[in-house]
Image 1 (cartoon, rainbow, N blue to C red):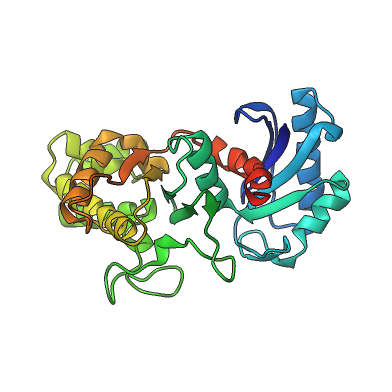
Image 2: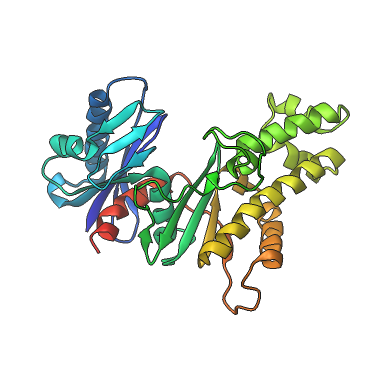
Length: 318
C-alpha cells in the first residue's frame, strides 16, 4: 500500500511517496516562500505531491491516503488552528488538500508528532509502542507515542515537552514562561551559553574556532572541549546536565521504551549520548526495574517528517 507524506515547513515543502516498508519511492520539493496566501502554498503542496508521484511512477489512484505534518496546532477536523510562522489561523487544511488532490483520505498533525511517528516505526524506535522523540534545534521539539499512537491531549496541543520548566524563574522562553527546558537545552540556548562563556574567557579556544567558522554555532563549544579548553568543558558539561534534566523528567513521567534524540546537536553522537545515559541511570525513579528506557540517536534525519506523515493514515485508522 502506498501513501504520500508531506512535510510543510517554514522554509520548504517536501512530499514523498512511501510504501509499507517505509521506503521513499519518489520525492517532490519546493520553497515555501512565506509570507504568501494559504491558497498559493496549498497549490504548491499539491504540485509537489504530483511531482513525488511522477518520480515514483504511480498515479493518485494507487495512493491509499495523504498525511501532512505542519508547524502549529491542528484539531481533529484537520484545521490548522494556529501556525505563526506560516500565517495560518483556523485554516481548513484537510478540505483544501482534498480540493486539490481529489476525494482521498487526508490526515494532518503537528510536524514534531509526525517526526516522532516516523522514528518510532521506521527509525531508531524499531516499532516501539511507547516512544518519545526529542529534537534539539532552534527550540526543543518533541512528540510522544503511547501504545503506538500520538499523544495529542484534549486540545491537540499535547507533547510540548520543551515547555516544561526545569528552572523556576529561570531564563525567559519564547513561549512567555521562564525556565523552560527549551531555554536551556535547545541549540539556540547552547549558542547563547557559548557566547556568554566566550565573553567571560577572552583567551578561550572558542574564539578561534568561531572565527574560522565565521560564527558561533552549536559545534563551537564541543570542538573546543575536545581540544581541552576549560571554558568549553564547562559549557558542554552544563549543557548536557540541562538536556539530561528534561530527559529524566520524561523517563519518570512516561517510562517509554526509547527516547530518541535528534537535531543538529545529536551529531555529537556518543560524546552527547554517553553522559546523558549516565545521568538518566543515576537519577531515574525506576532504579530497580529490569527494563529501562534506552536513550538513542535519531536515524531518519530529514526523512522522519515525511515518513511519519505518510504513516498518519495507517496509525489513525487503527
